Image (cartoon, rainbow, N blue to C red; front, side, top):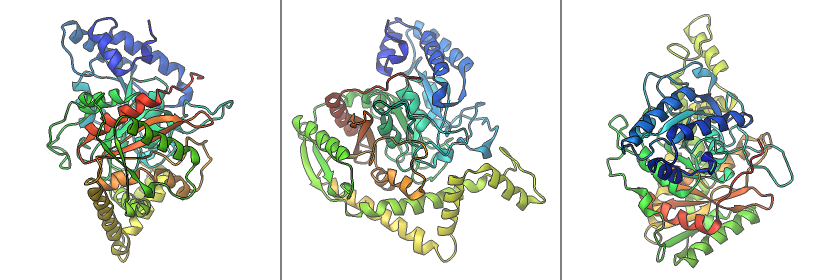
Length: 488
């Protein structure tokens, strides 16, 4: 029999329904695989006993011919999602020991669909990072290696644990979040598929907030079909999240395999900045050619305010973070460092509890919101955000979907980028999507000369994730699938 952890969700689902395998067997295979892959540091909390109990419950349902769309499928959950009675710390020291008494809407939707929880996945602290080096629990190791090298590489961030776990086959799929590229960038670095849905498609309730007007949850999976299955289960309207939109959730899987003949694919000229690597350019051109060969029309477009997206994002996101993170004070839960008085306790707790990157962004955010600077920075950044959205609105009259690179490079080594601004440039192709509230998907499209995954990004109209799955599947079929060599 095929190693059970090599099965995609779709393949495992078929075998489970046919009773060829049991949910418990599948779950035990993943528990064993996690044990062998500790060196990757993908999990910060494992829940094997809970996973077995959930798998047994799934087997009971399957035996009766019942069960949800993810019945018996073992998943990893990013540490940003509240899981009742289970470690939920956003990989920050300041939330030490926190185990919520409630379940996030996303995870509840997954458990309602029959999924099994393997544990909580590592991430950049409070989702602030592009390399998974800011986690209180240490960095995550990318399962990929350069040709003829055993040097470690980062998996991207902030959802680095999710991307690594999926790529290393130590979960069937994973939840993730994306504020400026934190699903799509790590997916591109690990040869996996990651979709950031339209803002409002997936409830944010019970998900630790970074920047509330930008955050959106989505899945990281092994292929496009699995991403469609996962998003269908994750998405819902939610009374507890006033930003969630009351629209029917389509059966995204039905978009897989549909022809792209006549589809208009936009190529934005602003996404070819000076110094863009020839390899990224080449894979981008190849992706456009694949779509053209399948009958799509390639159209050059202009998104003129793209060049302002990154600086505007790094005003808006830290400003919202400084407001959201003000609630962590060491009084009611998490880390508490006693001080001489209440203010001293706040200061000592935050100094000890927040890592350097979180402190940096909180200080930037507090500065841009302060008297005398609010209009000069925050208000101006919000105006730029409107212009970025208007660029896309105009483009939709000419094209149905936009094709761009997902990242400016392949995965890099830990410690290779120490300049924060240089690190922020990893989000150059992804932040526009969050600023405009649009859906975007990263799909593997090839390998670099060093043998590392390179991803392409597709950007869609609001709530048109179906076209993204339809188009991404064509690229996936043309590119073939890529798998990290099992060295660990």
